[in-house]
Length: 586
Image (cartoon, rainbow, N blue to C red; front, side):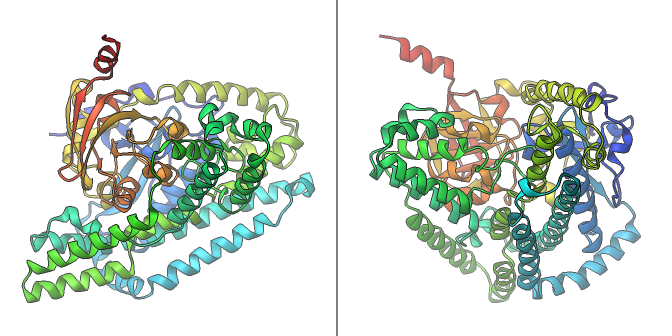
């Protein structure tokens, strides 16, 4: 029987000055909004992509263009037979998603027939479909990069802001239009493997070992750390916090000056990335160098360098061995089925795309809009360069079109900053699920990407979760590791992770990837076999357990834990308080 988690505490209020018309956007099935009466009848999950919370502009644009236009539109055009995409609601600044089921049996059958026609066409033309979409987005990116915002007349900033929004919306159309058919293709192969008795935890391994732009970025960042060590700068990094490193290196002079030049050259190529997914509220690494410096600082703490080439070779060898082992246990007829499914998934490789596309879309697509908003803030005399991000879309357009910012709107922005900060501090207390919680879900995105399964659903409803010492989840990346747990709320804290520690978080996204070159293991509340943590854990050979549900609740920062990525088990060996007591004993 489904359990109902009340959402009364999150219904009926939102950002100061919010009006329903602020969410008056086109959608396909269901529009986004704050929680409202009746929502308790649906199932809502806390989305791990935005653990900081979302500003008004970020909340409205992602929920409208990403969830409610992107997923719902792609689900209809493919279509997905049992589902119509995802919708969302807000509890404070925090986003909850909900799958939209298709419940009409006749319609499910009709959608399955359309899928049978449309999916083969996509798979036959996947490469050209994805590359043409990617190239279109890169051309738009280049257009924005060629604009010097300081020379744009104030009256024309509104046009650029609207263009930035269209760029994001088009990116979401391409993103979900490619993601859903690739996911369906993967799940078909996954199901065939299960029917033939193949261990389904190995399916991701069959597809690992492909190079991505995100991995290339990480290698280049690591190369900077090696240059810093060779230049004798390790102690400068060790003695200073990440936010102070640029000033410290500038003062140090000598070899540090050349290193900073190399670092800035790297930023010009690779620094157009944020530490959040499609979030206009988050700066790029060019705007804020803290996490780039932080990653280099912790790389330098490692006694041995991460061997990217050896890891890549090992991933390929492991892949080939897993494929050979799987095929050896099949009949000739089953081998033909396996080989056909494998070939289709190698050609349209979802785990590869899931990581690679982030470079072109998720990590930078909101930057042109952010930068135009910052320039507008300067022109209208706002208190802060990011003030416009605390406006809703209609309010932003009014300012861009000439409405005075001082007065009512500037006062609302101050109040909304306080609201954002208040709810940011509540993230650790937010329920993982709200509304009517089912025993299981059918939406493949929720299962394979978000890691919502019967085990995780039971875990998040456990009233004694904080006292659990043995946790279970998805065996995402094989191997075992023991170490100190470093529990992070967001990637803003990545510089806190020391080499050899176990990363514990809600889940990861591409901005977390550099950490996998230094950690011993990873444990996540969410994430399925196709989540970022699972994919990168396999590529880096880092034991990883995802979809634990309560990892950030049960595990304390500083606990000693064991991660068994082969069996999907996490054991808390000793609490941080006990370790501190042991350290204090003579």
